[in-house]
Length: 329
Image 1 (cartoon, helix red, strand yellow):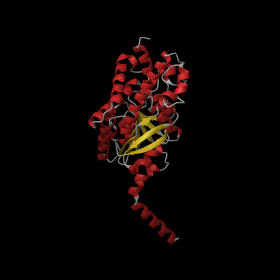
Image 2 (cartoon, rainbow, N blue to C red):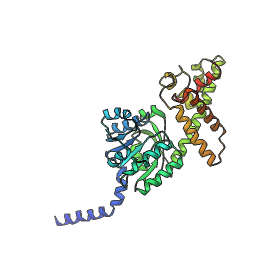
Image 3 (cartoon, one colour):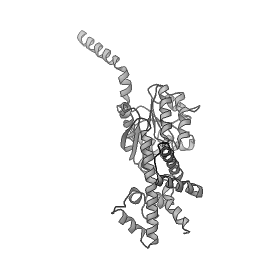
Image 4 (cartoon, rainbow, N blue to C red):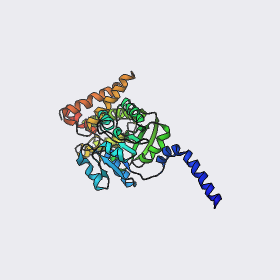
């Protein structure tokens, strides 16, 4: 018995020596401790819902209280501010519209960093300027917390089905801890490098997405004017070298596909305003790095004009409708 006691004591001492390591690595274990979630919009709500489906208690907040009702009905605890969420959770995910929103949620008067606990893992899935992600990481580090950027690709449909792609930037030793949560909401979780590289990957992806959508819309419109049936043209494109995501998964022409915004008067999906914002981020980073992006620049101009012409709240695939109206049809 004495030998058993001595063995247990030695084991305790060894564990005690490694308590700092345990504090970092325990988050990567499949523990179902509460997860904070700030931002319950079109993307945030299905993401938080999938965390609940995987058994994680969710503590959430949103600037618009009505946005919290669905999660509350599903069992999430709803609080009044990001600071209150930070006081109750040591893993927090944020999904917000823009850089100013992220700055406010993290560093504002009722922001996360006002009450964040040391060792808290902060994962921001917003699409923002990479420089802002770096600023938030520095601010979080001063409070003893860890900040990672993890923007997503896939849209509302993928968010609902937990098939998002996450592009993650931050400390590599914290990636497994982030991955535990992100795999509940996505099919692909990719480590990109230091803080800000996740945002860099997302900005590049969305610039290509916008260019591809405009090209698809132009192509479909030209084919229709030449007398081709739009479904037939889409079928041909999708078995040929012109195939792309905008043609085979998210076609912008009404009547070609079901279950996409073009089949619902361009409601839902990824808004034109958000696409214009992301293209603006791409333009800023291109300017800062002296990178020529002529097609990205033209796409940015087109989506800015669309916002001014009444398309701001429609899905970005409404560029097809915009082109049709431009030609007087």
